[in-house]
Amino acid sequence: QVQLVESGGGLVQPGGSLNLSCTASGSDPRLNVRAWYRQAEGGQRNWVALLTNGNTPNYADSVKGRFTISSDNAKNTIYLQMNSLKREDTAVYYCYYRGRDTYWGSGTQVTVSS
Figure 1 (cartoon, rainbow, N blue to C red):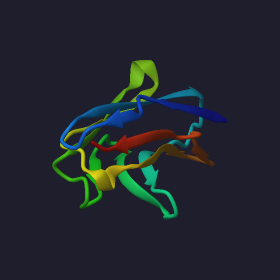
Figure 2 (cartoon, rainbow, N blue to C red; figure 1 turned 90 degrees about the horizontal axis):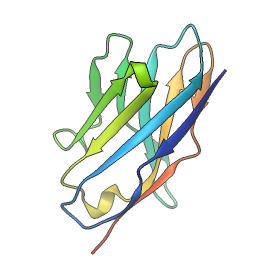
Figure 3 (cartoon, rainbow, N blue to C red; figure 1 turned 90 degrees about the vertical axis):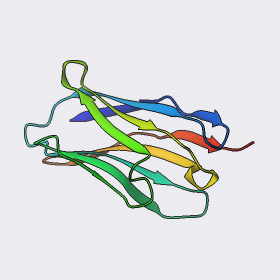
């Protein structure tokens, strides 16, 4: 089993930056995807960025060029560096791992507003 805890959310002005962290405890020997999703109020939960086992990053078109996903395996942590934030990036951001099972964190709120 894997437990995920996100941190780093908050209130930021348009054009600003935030760096989210997701720290995992426990293990899943079949882990093959680590990702970030987000869900705006009243909306669906959508994929934002992911890392496969080869650490190749993939991004949703809406964040490409502005967000960067990375990992520190020694710390069992993945990050989401978010730059040039827009109001439409406002959402709860969730960490997601997939292996033998799927795992979700409880989310961290990101609000982009002046």
